[in-house]
Image 1: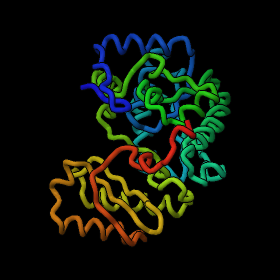
Image 2 (image 1 turned 30 degrees about the vertical axis):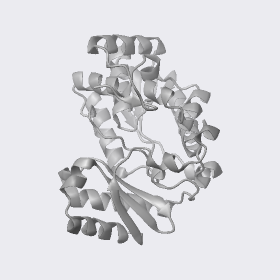
Image 3 (image 1 turned 60 degrees about the vertical axis):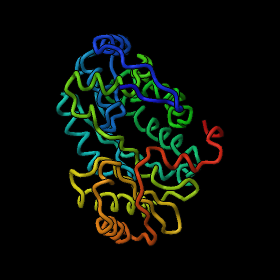
Image 4 (image 1 turned 90 degrees about the vertical axis):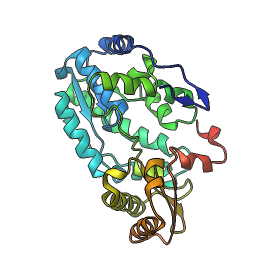
Length: 290
């Protein structure tokens, strides 16, 4: 299945053998890499491909730990790295020390990725690894609004998926062929992405949306795939659930979910359909931050 970028249909995925050949060819000249490893589909494929191209001893995965990263994501990344046979590290990052990140303008992700590269670069050198690599894919480059991609480029990070031309659909196709458990994993952006632009990022706000999402997931279990609690400011929240889940919910169920979110400190809670990147729709001039 093809994806769309900027509303235009993307090219259909190439044959898996072609994807594998292109990705491994991009990675082999690197020699050794430290992969910025969120545990999502993109970075998991980079780790798996690097282990195949370079050997597991020449690869390490680093999952940044901060107030913006749910602990369940960190635990999942550790298990996956261990399953792939590569060394795993959990360095601490301090995005909140960066004023541009706390301010939460449209370029927040630039300061987040700058902090990540500031931490991973020295870690790679201590480990004797030649490069830092990220999970940026070809669709990310075409999307236009990706301040974090710019920060990675400024730091000299490798982008094997993008360099091999792999779209998100192709990432998932090759991951499925390699039996990676992340092949169909939903996107899991950091908790800061839940805060409306212009709303200052604080540990308390991050904890509140994280607790609210965890409570909803615990209540719904396997019935839900995508959950977002959007902090709209002034104690207003929007709970977003994927279509399949939303269609199964009676009004009483929705009231119960609103109550879970209110219990974390929100007052006004709406329930709507999940839309990836919904906060970007509220940004008046995204081109300013590219």
